Image 1 (cartoon, helix red, strand yellow):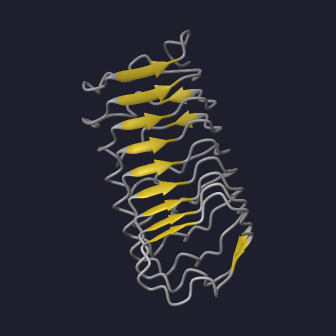
Image 2 (cartoon, one colour):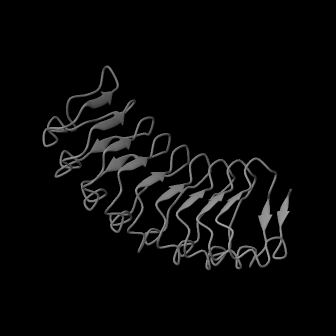
Length: 219
C-alpha cells in the first residue's frame, strides 16, 4: 500500500483500531479518516509519510493512541491534533522533525506518554508542553538540543521518566526538575554540562544516568 485515499475507509463509523504499520505509504488523501469517528488507535509506524494536511485527523475525536514512528516527517502542522483532545499516547520518534510549533500540544491535557526521540529537534519553545499536565514519560533522546531551561518542564510535575541522552546539551537548568515528586528515571548520557546543583530537589530519583566524565558545573 503506497497511498490512502478518501474511499478506503468509508462508513466504518464503529472501527476502533486501524493498523497500517510497515507498509510503503507515502501519502494520505485529505478526508481519508473522516468517517472513523469511533477510532481509538491509529498505527502508521514504519511508512514513508513526509507530511500531513492540517485537518487529516479532524474527525478522530475519540483517538487515544497515535503512532507515527519511523516515517519521513520533517515538519508538523501546528493544528494537527487540535480536535484529538482524548490522546493519551503520541509517538513521533525516528523521523526528521526539526522544529515543533509552539502551540502543537495545546489542549492535549490527557497525554501521558510522548515519544520524540531520534529527530533533529534543536529548540523547544518554553511553553511547548504547558498543557501536558498528566505527562509521565517523555523521550527526547538523540536530537540536537543544546539548552534546557527550567520553563521547558515547568507544568509537567507528574513526570516519572525523562530520556535526554545523546543530544548536544551544553546547559541544563539546575531547577529543571523542581517539584517533580514522582520522578524516578533520568537519562542524560553524553551531556556536556550539568549545573552542580542539578537533581538536588528530586529526592525520589532512582537513576540519574550521566556520561562518566561529565563536567560538574557550567561556566
